[in-house]
Each structure stands twice: as C-alpha cells, then as structure tokens.
Image 1 (spheres, rainbow, N blue to C red):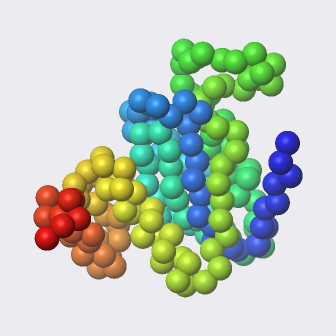
Image 2: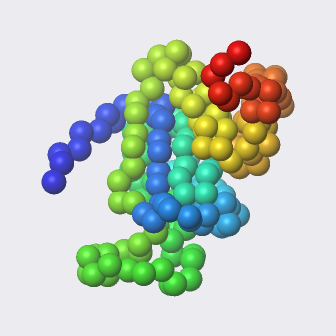
Length: 177
C-alpha cells in the first residue's frame, strides 16, 4: 500500500479531484446535485472553508478550497462530505465484500487527489482547469453552458468574460487551416 504524504499547511489553498468509484456511465453527482450542495453546506457550518472554484461533473468533482488560518484539516471535510452524501442515498449499489466489512458504501473512491497551491500562477492555472473541465470532457460547447460550476460566479464578478475559452463550434477541430 502506498505511503501517502500530504501537505498540511494551516490556512492553505488546495486543488482537489474527487471521483466516484464507478465512473463509467455514471451521472450520480449531477443527478443528486442538491444532495451534494446541502451536504457541503452542512460541513461548511461546522468546518468552514472557502470555495475558490468548483465544478461538479457527472462522475467526479474538481475544486479549489482555502482553509481558515490555523486549520489544515481538509481530510475531515472530505470524509464528511463523502459519508454524508453517501448516507443520504438509498442502498441500491453493488457493495464489495471489502466495503461491506469496512462498513462503507461503493459510491466514492476512497482516496482523492490533492495539490497544495504554491503561488498565484499555480492558483490561476488550477482555477482555469476547474472551469474549463466540462468543455474538455465534451459535455458542453461553451464553458458558460455547464450549470454546475463556479464559473458563473466568476463571470458575475467580471473575472472571466462569458465567452471565455470561446465556442467549440468556432474552433478548428481538424487542426488544419
């Protein structure tokens, strides 16, 4: 088993990718978007954090969070978000013997990817990555068309133009002239 080393920096900012266990043809996260939103709100009450950017795709999440000063515990927040949303869903999924023995659901992957944001350029690149992800996956032709993204908040604040990254219809997808 790998020995994961995590950066614990009080008040730090992190980029996360969190996946469903069964990703193929799974739209659970957008189908249950209100459940996910309510779970995140409940966790934020007890364990505050700032959502710098967030996008929910059918089978995974990308986000950038900043924790309060003197707090580096993003692990507890993710554990509560994942367990809280899992408990609220009906027990209809297949559960492996390993997960049953551990008292776990077969909804989320156990681990997640996190990256400590080191500077302003790193921050901007990860914010952009979060927002462009639905376009990269082919879910939309324009970033603004994906409803489950903090991109819209950035447009309202004047940080991004609504047509940021353009329109796939106007792009040369063949790579030629």
